[in-house]
Image (cartoon, rainbow, N blue to C red; front, side, top):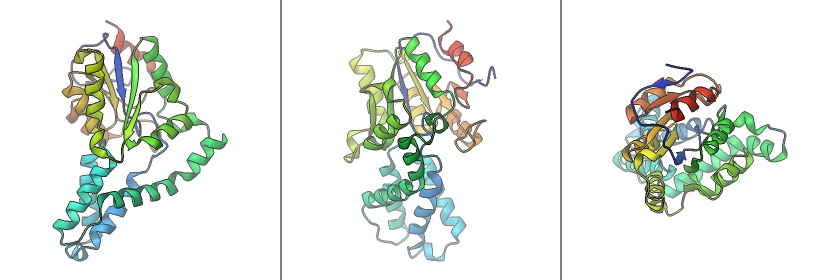
Length: 272
């Protein structure tokens, strides 16, 4: 561990040309607490099934938590598809997964409404709703002529708006990508493959940042260098140990809590 950086795996650094960054939990904290919305909602839906009616609440909550956690980093629709599959397996008749996604998102927007209004009106400082040091990170990437891409499992229309509200959209320009209604037309893996293909890159020229299993695994599978951001979203400091363990299993080269020590992170990534 050096300067808050945990070195997990060796990897080639200093030659990066493009970077892929996750959004929620990696840059943005606007949606902090989303798990506390999705997990009980999904558990409630499981409780309506013939099998679920006879199960204790804790067991239903654990079941929901496990598959939601497993799919974190993918588009939200995949968690909703799995919910529908679980409802069927438990003897119930599920709704269309899109209906579950729409209802979850309605509840989440209620949860974050004050944040969005505060950002829009200027009564909330955007810096309080980003992972600490995020602006320094993005400035550092640009100094090293690394082109950043934003790829999120959240619907693109909301990613665009929230990136604008927390004032990071200018760093990415047109390279902001999010989930689509036709969900099979987008994935973080597709964004990575497109970057490599269109820019004739080798994997070692690709850098990635994420707080979820999916994006770290995608970067590593492409031959890139993956920085796992084990951000404690609620407290905005320290390491989230649950994230840390999952990011290490996913193949992260480095683990960091946030970007406060940007000098040490810059040295780790770009000093040859």
